[in-house]
Structures are given as structure tokens and as C-alpha cells.
Length: 91
Image (cartoon, rainbow, N blue to C red; front, side):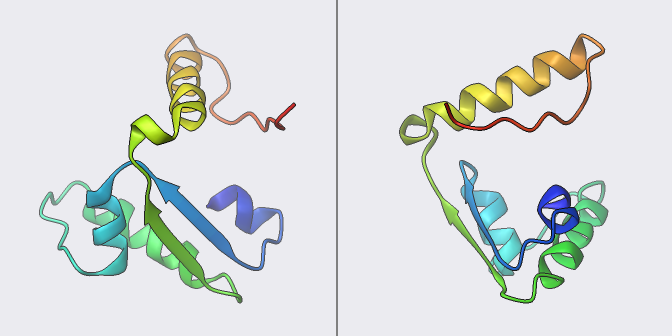
């Protein structure tokens, strides 16, 4: 979301494998964990900054194997001391 904002995106459509996060962002479920509330508030602040709005939809992990693989690669890369952000293009 931060990168989309920095790149000047007008609108974002989030496809998430966590139904919990989708429902929390939509305000239908509350964020119970006090440690996560500041992250949730930051996410909403960023999302509200997109002039064209935003959406968030749940996509089961089994139906989104490419995104899951990219997320796991990012976790491994950061754990190994690599950069936290890498922009890739489908090829």
C-alpha cells in the first residue's frame, strides 16, 4: 500500500489470503490484539489517502499460489539480511 501511494496510484484493490485482515480493514471485525492496532490504523490511513478508493477481497491461499510464493520469498530474503522491498514484474 505504501509503495502504491508513493507511485501515485489512484486506487488499490487488495487481494488477501487472510479473511481476518479483510474483515478488520472493512471494520466488520475488531482488532483485538493491542500490538496490531497501530498497524491497522496506519493501513487505514494509507488506504483512505487513495482518491479513487480501495477494496479488499479474500482469496484463499490455494487459489493464489504465485502471491504466496512471492510473500514467502520476501520473508526468506529479509530473514537473510536482504532488502525488504523488491519490485517484480510478471514475466
